[in-house]
Image 1 (tube, chains in turn brown, red):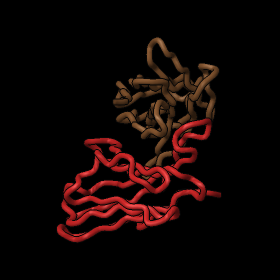
Image 2: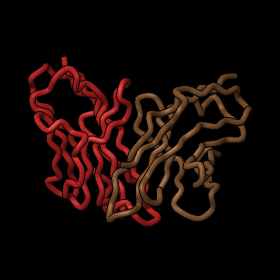
Image 3: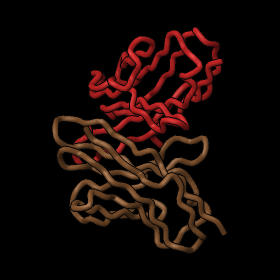
Length: 115
Length: 117
């Protein structure tokens, strides 16, 4: 069974500072990894994904994430946070073994960026 | 601008009533997911279709919930009878490529906020 853990319910950052939102995963095969963001009363929006290749992937709004196979982690990062980045962030995983696979989400981390 | 469309956006119903939520996936996408979001449980996968066939509905209470895809442009999630504990936001998502290959992310609708009183 595949699973995702987001160990922090909330992350607080001052605007202009770097941010990290943590994610670890567990799959039986090779993972596809994703980050989504959810603003209040909205659906989830895709931010970025890791499929294969370079361990550092870049996505929307200046976000990036680093895939670390040995630590089974896929932490979301941004060099300089903005107040408008405040939202709920979800990490997700798909196990690419087999013909098709479901998309499993973590519990979410609320990012609060303050002035 | 292709998007997943869910209707209704909001639904308030009395306990015991039937509720049907609809989803129009993005044209050409062959995988469809139904998720339920609550404060307590987060995002729970209820059902998952590929090429209109149900692949995994283990997260769905079978006695009252049912999910179908009558055709490639419509997915439905039905609750009968509804209960107050079903109050949540229900999201539909669709994706291309059956989950494999480079185009594998899912795109979410705006959700249906269900309140059962």
